[in-house]
Image (tube, rainbow, N blue to C red; front, side, top):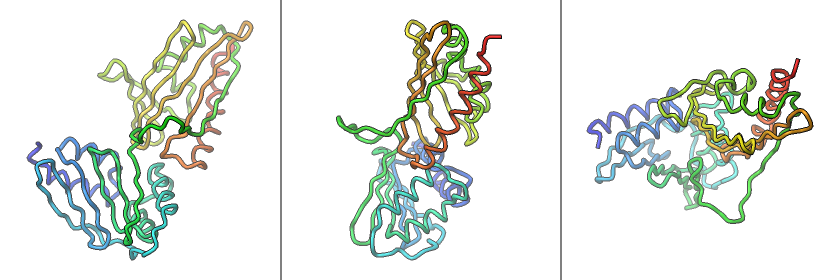
Length: 273
């Protein structure tokens, strides 16, 4: 147990309210300090942090900028959560609190060990939001997906080798990848995106042209299947995107449109002279 856990709790509260820290960053700090969860009470303007040993500290928060409504509107709360997860333009934690309180959220419980957040209303209704990648599996559940393809005027092996090297990604994935570098973990690369730091792992297999990769940032994490196959004397690159739970339909559509820009750049780079 980190003996400084109460100071960490205060720092994360200040970081949340000032906008200096994302939700994911506060969770990481709290977990490292040994905190197992915390409870936010909008009506009392408090945040209480708990440890596995039964210790707790209650801290005062900024006054919630909206009265907690009586009707619990889960749809509005979910929409506010998606804006927060996507860090939509103009997002602030204070604005988020005002939206969910106005939708009947009286507070929420964050469980680091349960990897979920429970939002509750004045009349007992609840909404559970799971951390990215933590939702219980369902044998029949599917999510929205989009597959993009681009024809490349080069040898399939050359295309595979170029794409399998994550050091090449800033050259073609010009919208989402600003820089890449090897990390201390040999399986993962550090990446800089327009939204901040992220990590990328390639799981390639040259025998079948497989270029599946894993992406993790502060807002979401997902696996992207991809493949290069022969097409005559050239190659075809196929990549499938599954919509992360943190993305709204509109935000996902915007990101998918930008993929066309990157695939056009890839085609330009791999064009045989």
